[in-house]
Image 1 (cartoon, rainbow, N blue to C red):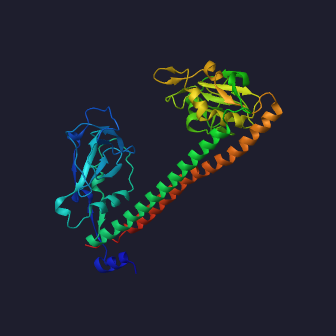
Image 2: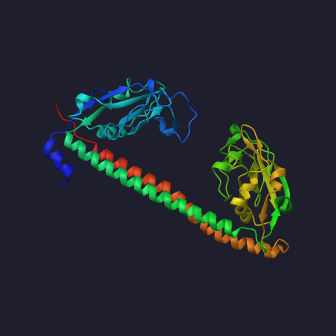
Image 3: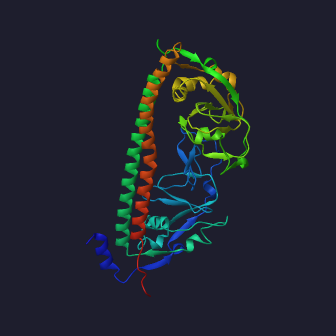
Length: 400
């Protein structure tokens, strides 16, 4: 018999009592803790928090209006509209007034464990359907199980340990992925680098044609029609090369096909501007605006790998036009130089390009397998935690 089962049999064999959250928890409004200056800097000391997914928005140097929390005196910050919440055990300021700071009522510290309440709140299945303040009107009126204090402590010990192990696994997998990516980037840059047998050649000389796509509006993307690519998808969806489009449209005028290189010439970051990828699929597709299509007679995957190197990306960042967003253009892209093996002997050059592609494809697959496996493993652990949390926090209700 486990310690948990023993405690249940000894302390609450007939079931446990349920009570409203508002009878256990106090709340405080965040008004006096709201940050005044949102010019954050990582060099500053005090974090500015949101109860939403972002959690830490930045750091401020403001020294007044700081909410004090610690490992001995933690707090739960609760988003009053979405019901998202976080456990906080350090001093902070907040960005929004749309939250509550929750702590255990002082007169309930003898029969309620604050960390236990946090886990119970995680187990509440509720999604707001209206944009109203949730804590007072709805959320605090949920009833929660309140088993005897020693049983709460044992549940907290089990769930915290599970959370700790999950965090350790996530950190290990993330570190492994980072190391693999760094190793991949190092070998990619070494394989595709300037030397006697791989002189630098301008894209303008390699291109047989280079042209801009034509705009495809968001509302023109559909589940049916001709495959298409919009420029934002090059940043968010496609890797070095791809063979299928995620979008389709009934509207389009400019096309691309097998082997073409696509450049996104509008973006938010100098470091990523003119991100490129090769299309190695079989269909003829429409291309959206703010994309440059390059036709050529080289190995498309080799071109894509070469254009993803550190050397190529530094060149892409030159010749940009600054405004609210970052831009590139066809003349700037034509000036980019990449190493081409034996450029004067096309057969020998293509054979050399293919050898490099074969090596990088294997390495790229390994990195992608880890990249895909990491979220899947984390999600599996999270579902496992939620399953056990539900089991641990499901009690027979005590008859009054």
